[in-house]
Length: 114
Ligand code: 5GP
Ligand code: ZN
Image (cartoon, rainbow, N blue to C red; front, top):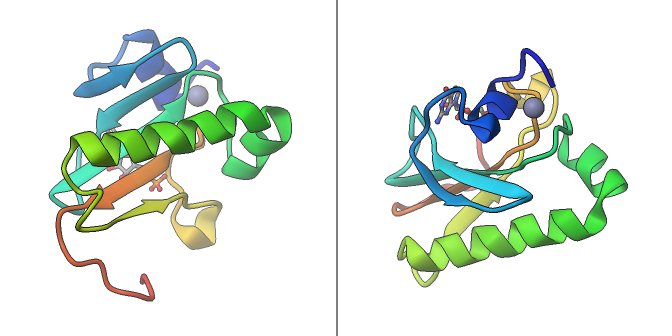
């Protein structure tokens, strides 16, 4: 999609610290990390929200979550614990309208979130 920052990262037009790339997913470090490990896991295809992605392609949604889990292992936070967050809509603070799963770990994560 034109004018989408994360489509531009998928295309390689905007640089990012990419830690995983395959035909249907990209994972890269958040530019403004909120935890020692803060990685964004996104589908290559443009969908605005997790619900829209899941409705359009449930299998891809599952693969993204599996990828997030394997990245948690490789980043060393699987045992200590981590959080997968998907902000949806303005009230939840979604600022980029290309669905992304935040993978957060490496510190204690309080609950409930703000
Ligand atoms: P949201 O606010 O939509 O839940 O999350 C968007 C995330 O994208 C934020 O955590 C923000 O720091 C990150 N972000 C915004 N612009 C860029 C960028 O150009 N590169 C990277 N790597 N992350 C970005
Ligand atoms: Zn996009």
